[in-house]
Every structure is written in C-alpha cells, then in structure tokens.
Length: 286
Image (cartoon, rainbow, N blue to C red; front, side, top):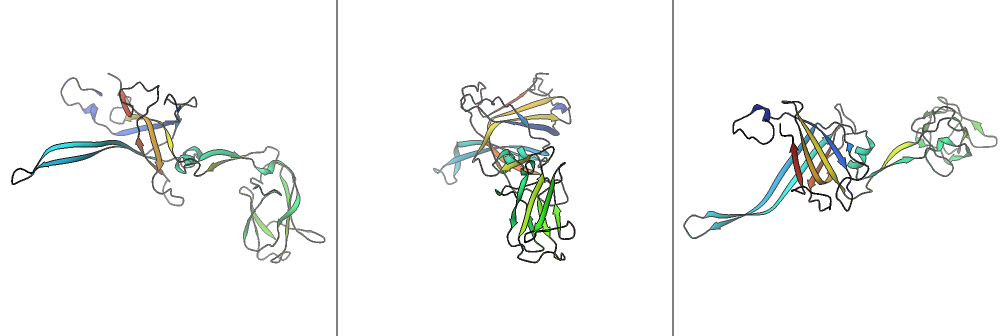
C-alpha cells in the first residue's frame, strides 16, 4: 500500500506515474505560515522535479601503500526544486517569472481627450503610440462609445481618413500613417482628440518587472499517481525560494512554457511545528 510499507513485500501500488498540481502562497514574516491571501493554483505543470544535493569531504588514510577512504564528512545538504508552467498568459505567473508585481493600468479611454498635438513631426510608414495630452497610453479604442479623430494640424485642420491616410490597431492603441496617403507629407504635425469616452471603461492588467529580488513562500505539490488514481501525496516545502530558469518562448509552434528553479530553505517561523522545517511529505495511512 502507498506510504510506509509494513508488509515487507513489493507492491505495484508504489510505482509512480507522476501527475499533480502546484499551489503557492506568500508567508507571514513572523509565523512562517501562509498569509490570509492563501494559496494560488499555478495551473497546469507538465514537469516537477525534486533534487537532493549533498556536499561531502572524504578523508583518505595514507598509512599503507594504497590510500583508502576512512571517513566521509557531510558538509552540506540542499533540496532543489524545478518545475514548468504552461499557463504563461496568466499575469500572476508571468510576474513570478519576471520577478515582478501585478497591477492595473488605468486606461485613458474612459475620459474625453481635448484635441492636442500627438505628433509634431510625422514620418509616414512608421507606427506611433496613441497617448493623451499628459502622455498616458490609450488602448481599446474599439470600446463601445468611443469616438476619436485624427487631423493634420494647420489652418484649417484637415481630417484624416482611416485606410486612406492611416491604419490603426484600436485594441493596442497604435496608428500608422500610410505612405500612399496624399494628405500628409513627412514633417506634418498630427492632432488627436477623443470626443466621446468609452461607455463601459475597461482597465488593463499589467506586470511590473524586476520589482522583487526574491520570491519566497510555501509551495505545495499535491501529487496524484496515474498508476493509482486517488492516492494523493502532499509535498510541503515550508519556504521555497524561487527564481526563473531559462527562456520564455515568445514565438513558436509549440505551447510556451516558463521554467522555474528553487531551493527549499529552512523556515524559522514560529508557526512551523513539523519535525522538518524544510520539507514534509505526507500521505494517508491506507
């Protein structure tokens, strides 16, 4: 039966074809236990590995013609963690990979923008970011209710026409002035205005990279064995110190994955009551 073998005989139920899920929580700085925010499911993980590393020093006896080891000293021990995540568009996962934080970006499309000069010296054929008069990016111009205009600034101003003078990516707030357009010439100033704001404003999720130097918390790996479905094992890393590992594929023909590595540190919090403050593995006595 899974767990401690009390029969002294082999058991095919102890074979493991690994499956499982990863949960992660930030720790309370005093107790070492997860904060009130609780654990977050990191999503599908195609790989999870545990590595135990021992640093040793061997002493050799030199009294005879052939040396032989007469003492082995264990200098240090370390438990390493490695895993991969499939859900790379999850901005909380992305924040972990980029050592960053998540926040919300206040989309400037929810207020009327009085006409101002967006570009002082246009270069036809190039793309430009659409911003408001204070420099904030404007996205989601295809939102319900939004009405905007682009004009060649002059006396008088000349309205520009989409797909004749410019093309626009409304969702991402980018505009390109077409080389074939006859109204504009290089060097012209471009005015932008949003006369009607979005009816149902939507802000953007964002990740601010390199905002944190360490990612520490309790990591739970709930292992489910495909060879014995239903018999779960909990691997509790009391304080996992995680960091990104390797590349994040941005273009390719396969599902992108993000890789992490880490070390199981000793958790010295007052709330840790387990015999091991590094890693505890539990299963039911079946």
